[in-house]
Length: 205
Image (cartoon, rainbow, N blue to C red; front, side, top):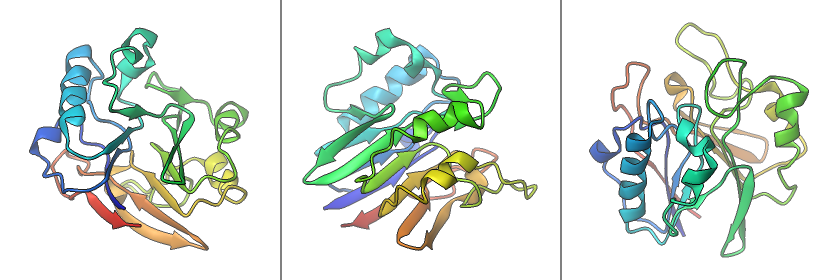
């Protein structure tokens, strides 16, 4: 099974070359302003991709996915994961869009107990975790050196130990690393100046 994974396209999805595969995963910030037009444009494009399965986890720019009425308009061939799971060929996926913060961004939750309640929902049997935010200290460093990942998510990962963890959010930290038995991937396509700097990840299971 081939996974094709990307994140943080911010309306540049039409300019990204998407490889062939079985499952197409987008880990958030598919839009920039989160408007209806941006969202519908992305959904048409994402829905038209030939991959058998398509998984979308929104990000902090994707405001329109907070509107319940929009969820009824998501094409049926897109699996939108907002704090929920999906099983494909015996592989357990879980997706969450929440990001730490107290500003007026989409899916923002205050650090501490407020955001922890969402990480507590992640099942222990999760094989592939898709979040928009990185965990604290893992591919979460911005150009100034500040680490913006989620401490509560990092603590949760000591209990829930997925084989793969996909995320984005921090453009500067795109790349991969491995800690214990989990492989981590920051899938950001754009750099901090919103230039396309990376290609989608191709991963064969």
